[in-house]
Length: 152
Image 1 (cartoon, rainbow, N blue to C red):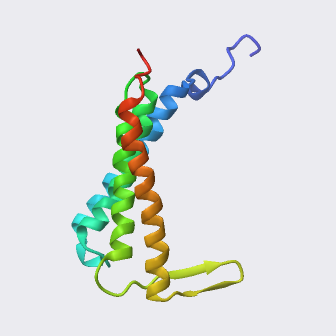
Image 2: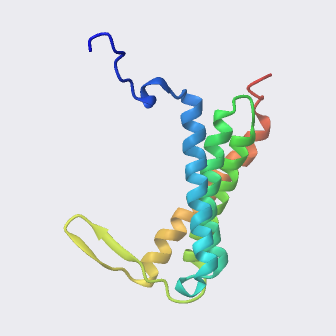
C-alpha cells in the first residue's frame, strides 16, 4: 500500500505558541495552588501553622501562575501586580516563621550533614529571608507605578 497516506499523529499537527505555553503553565501553577488550598480547607487538622499561613503559602502558587499569565498578555501591568502579591505572600509566610509564637523547629540540611536546628537558628534564617523579601517587595511597589506601560 504505497499509495496510502502516512499516519501523522494529531500532536504533530498542533504546535503551541510561546504565549500559549506560558498561559498553559500559568494556569497549571495557579491550579496547583488552588488544589493545595482545598486540601488545607478539607484537612486543617494536618497543619502545623495557623490556617492563614497555609493559605498564604498556597497563594504564592496562585499568584505565581497569575503573574505568568499576566506576563503572557503583553501590554498589561497585571502580571507585575501579581508579582507584588506573590512576594507579599512569601514575606507573610516567612514573617510568621520568624516572629510567630511557639517553638520554631527547622530542619537543617547541607551536604554530608542533616539534623534539627535550634529555634534561634530557624528564626534567624527566616528573619533574614523576611527582611530580604520585604525589601524586594518595597522596591517593586515603589518602582512599578513609575514604569511606563508596554503598550504606550
